[in-house]
Image 1 (cartoon, rainbow, N blue to C red):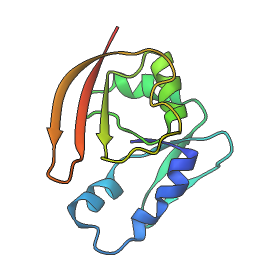
Image 2 (cartoon, rainbow, N blue to C red; image 1 turned 45 degrees about the vertical axis):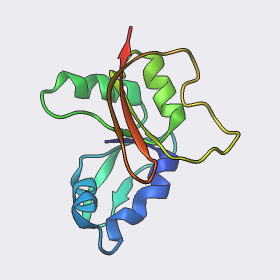
Image 3 (cartoon, rainbow, N blue to C red; image 1 turned 45 degrees about the horizontal axis):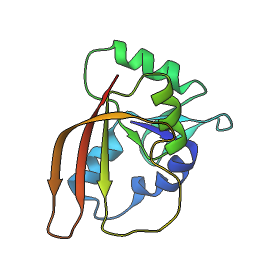
Image 4 (spheres, one colour; image 1 turned 60 degrees about the vertical axis):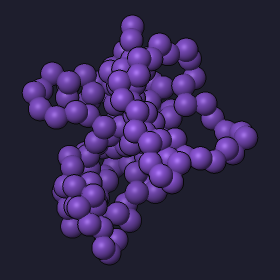
Length: 135
């Protein structure tokens, strides 16, 4: 899992939250990398600390060379934009909630060609959309 420094700062409470259930357990045990130019370390409660990287694109390139699981980017539109520009993003999963704020940042700064892979909707109106980035 790759997080930007702001997303990391907002997420550290997960490690000590009560009643986390299966999702929290999985999240806490993931290998984490935090993209930051200022952090020296990134603790995650009693779980293994995240590795701080000053070069997230280089870290993702290195991780993609390894066999194994997918790399998740959690939050951070700025970090996603830099990885998209570097050609390092293969898929994007969007969680769409039935609320319109009317303003805010775009999900994509530049045009992206997307191919819908999967769409799942829930009774509460939330939809999960999974797209392949086509080049």
